[in-house]
Image 1 (cartoon, rainbow, N blue to C red):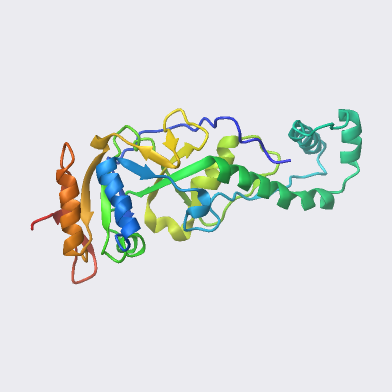
Image 2: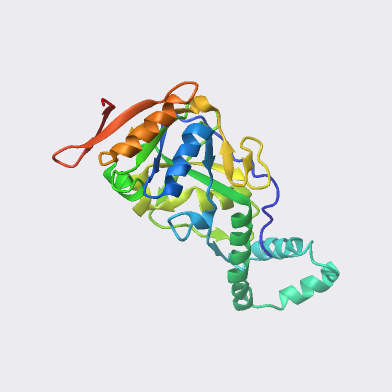
Length: 281
């Protein structure tokens, strides 16, 4: 009975007013260094599955049942349930199915919601991939949480157009709003699943690029990786505690690019604020 998410979802894409987006990365392990190297030299960046993101409710929109006492709603709901059965082999005639459906109580229908929610979550997990950025390069918690307490880096991307100019701004809400279970609005489902987060995450000032595992009109992934225009990566901000060997490696990678990156250095002031300035060896 899950809503069908197999068709392309026509989300409106808007070019950002902001011209820069930042991707914070750790360099703590050899694998993490290779990921950064692949971004800098390979012009490839990985999109995550919803289940790979930090917030455990990512990709899990919540649903509710409407007013089953209302005839208009009941008629709409029953027609939706019937339409969700189109893939069922040997389904009964519509008249027989509807007669069975009308015998069910509201409690019976509510018992199906958990099953429907799981089906929607599975459909979202199977299809959608997410690339997260921040519009804020100097938030101390971003450096702490995503760049190994300033031992990592922040990659600077041009978001004035191209692959990253189509990122969506994440909406932060005090409480998530349940969707009516029979909604056919795929945009609302995807927005609730991937573009709405709880207010506790608002400090991230997050933007997201979305792509479909099954092909997308704008972004084409290969095994969760997007190959982007090299011109869209503008620079790297070195964390305040970035090791000298890591700095030298990143500067060396930059020099191998057709157009070297601009290298910046982050510093932490005496009051704890983060400052960014051009790197001076």
